[in-house]
Image 1 (cartoon, rainbow over the protein chains, first blue to last red):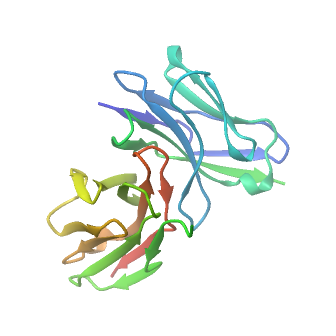
Image 2 (image 1 turned 180 degrees about the horizontal axis):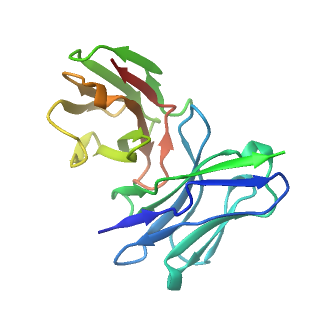
Length: 113
Length: 112
């Protein structure tokens, strides 16, 4: 079955430290891949997406993600975390435009000052 | 554009009552999605529409749930009768060509 796995439920980092959030997918073919962020009481906002081409994708707010086919992974990174990055982050996958988007269970990021 | 607009933001109702959630997608978007978010199950796709036509409703939990999209600028999700286990945050999202989704702020539903 198609699935998206985020193995880390909670992550705590210090402000200014680097961040990596993990995401693995299980699909027959390479899906479209997304990272969304959800702030408390808000809907989800798209950070970045990967459809094809360059495996390192740049997004908003200084985030980037790297697609690794051999590892079926699409990990989200940021070199220096800001306190305002504290939120929940969701990885998602889709087999093509207009098809069902499947979300991971999310990773809650806490930033210590 | 004001983004995806959902109403109400919060809804508290008693078990057995009918609940109607509303969504106005972004103008020009041709896809509309209804998601439910709970601690236990995360984000679940309930149903989605393309050009006002329901495409996949396999996520609708049971017959108590129904969704309509009478025109390109409005959709409703109805629960009748509501039950406590329906308590969740319900999100509406819209997109162009079904790719990048724009989410509303959600409706927090509490069924007592």
